[in-house]
Structures are given as structure tokens and as C-alpha cells.
Length: 153
Image (cartoon, rainbow, N blue to C red; front, top):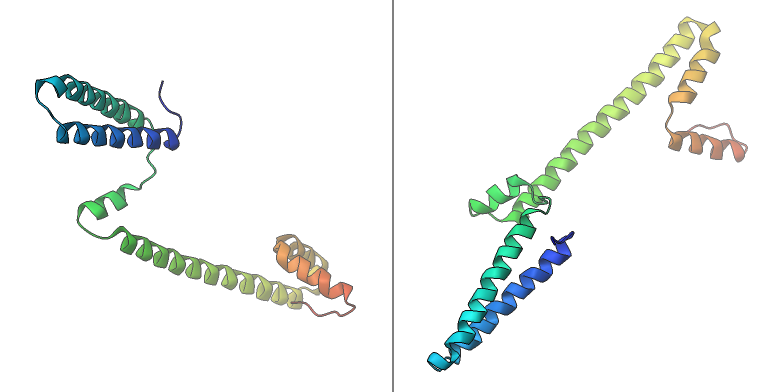
């Protein structure tokens, strides 16, 4: 029966290492034909363990991105890849945060200009702004209102 987790495959790897160690000990203590059967048995067991490991490990989902495998195959350090990836994600996050803040400022300025142009639309504009405002801003406003001040953050 195939293992259902990476822990089971990890245990199989440990078994293969144990088999290799036993083969090493049997080879070191080789005393001719009388120990040959034991060595054949250990090698057969190792072959079976490797076959089981290969079959079960191939059933696991791939968790290593192919880019990292290629990076390591080309002789480069995967830690450098990770650092570069984190830096790229940070740059992307900063860019997206800037865009989000720009759209928020645009929304607020557009609402302000709409109220100036059409004062009768003030309640509708305020309702739209309230529905589109992020939860965190709403919580800040509620906190400010409960303190008795009319400042908005």
C-alpha cells in the first residue's frame, strides 16, 4: 500500500539508509562463502526498498518548483534563489500597495469633486464611499467617533 504522506516516504528513506549501512557492515565483515548468503539477502532487501521508495515517492505531489530544481542543477545556490524571489515579491508588493493607495486617493478626490459639482449628490457619494471603504478605515473612524471628536484618519 502506498504511503499517503511525506512522512511515510521519509521513513522509507531511513530504511534504505539502514539497509545500506547493514550492507556496509556485512561487506566489512565478509568472511567468504559462509557470509555470502547474508550479503545477497541484504542486497535483495535494498533493491526491494529502493523499488518501493521510488514508486511511493513518485505518487507524492511535487512540492519543489521546477525553477529551483533547474537552478540547483546549474550549480547555483538555492538560498540565493530564495533571497532573489523574496526581493522580487517585496518589490511587487510595494508596487501594488502604491497602486492601491493611488486609487484610494483618486476615489476620494473624485468624490470630493463630485460633491462640489453636484451638492445634491452628497448623500449618495457618501454612501458609495462608506460601502467601498476598507474595514480597517471604518474601524478607525468608529474609534474616533466614540472618542467624541470628528476627525477622520
